[in-house]
Length: 358
Image 1 (cartoon, rainbow, N blue to C red):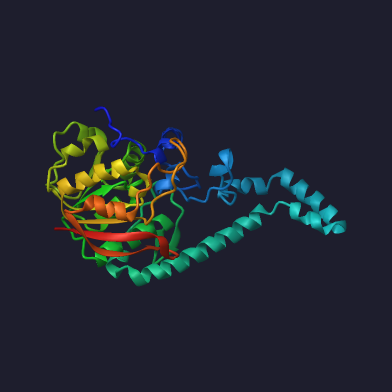
Image 2: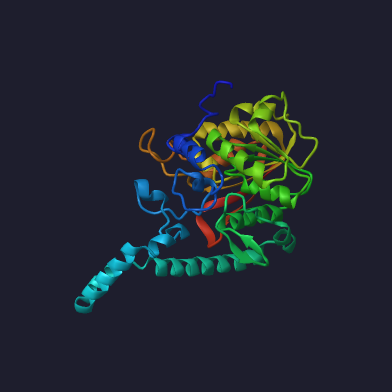
């Protein structure tokens, strides 16, 4: 493996999470990758689990309403505890709050989550073309937390990806048979979705080691073939892009293997904002060398939280949307800019931007 430069390695934002990501994968694999809740610094942070985590430290990854706790509801301890509390509460009603009502809370939480999903899906149906809704099929790889609609199962992260791909479609950016460069693709949901909707499209998936390893493991099972892994890419002199219907997993230190002017468009979602300025400039150089037509990104307008010092949570120098525009200039010109869409409405702090090559 080649020696990594500062622009090819993990940013300050992800450096503190890198080991925990690998530990999580070594411990759990991808069997429940998208299932139970996990907190920041885990696979949930880039599209993995349910993302409901509560508390601090060891409690961060606990979802109190997860079905794994059902056996606790029926335990003898809970039965005797509630019996005691009920007796005391007859005389001192305020003690009733100490009773264990997790089973009821789980039911209420489930109903609440389902109501939110149905509302989000109704909004999505107004924005996403019918053919996309029909063609998008989310696999159950990793046991995602899903809800039912239109005779299929959907998760919140999958709906978010669908809304963003539909946004690119409305801008006239996507078509079948393209080569798409995705920088910072998380566990690979958007790459998977794009290759579902545009079956002859090739995706070059570039990410840092924690995400790249997780994404390759996920996509290799979620897709029926067509994933060229890191080790395969390592053995080639150049990423061959002639066949279509493939996803190439490429580490930052392998990007020189992508032929010049071989890519139709580049996309980045919530990733530039987690990099340092020099890393965005590194990928900006890659885009200028390889991309023929367009760039689409969705990131925070003012950049991520700034770390007080190296090793703290955040980035050392926040990357704003203005900095991204300056990095892409003069080869790329801003065509469209709008407040980023979320499943709860428009975001006031994020922007979606489309650029054309001049």
